[in-house]
Length: 82
Image (tube, rainbow, N blue to C red; front, side, top):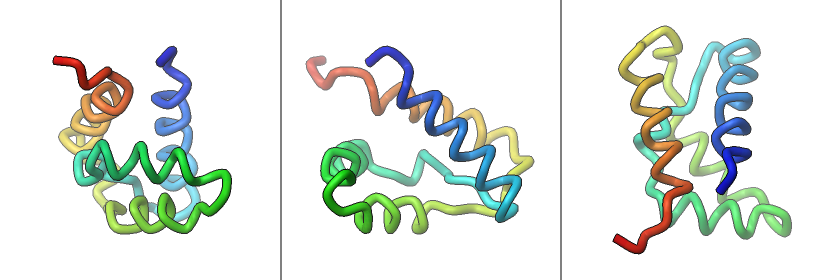
């Protein structure tokens, strides 16, 4: 909960933008599905790769996609105790 996940998601987006001309639209990835896939990824990363693949977009210069991604990134790491 200290920001490493957010940093990693930004880093991943930068790599994808540079190498593939794509980015992840994080607003399309459900929080429970993402967290479950991340938890299982050290054993089997197919689930997280499929989640990411399904959310790829070529709108790499779209400010709205970027800002929604930042917002969603915070939601992934906040507790569900509200």
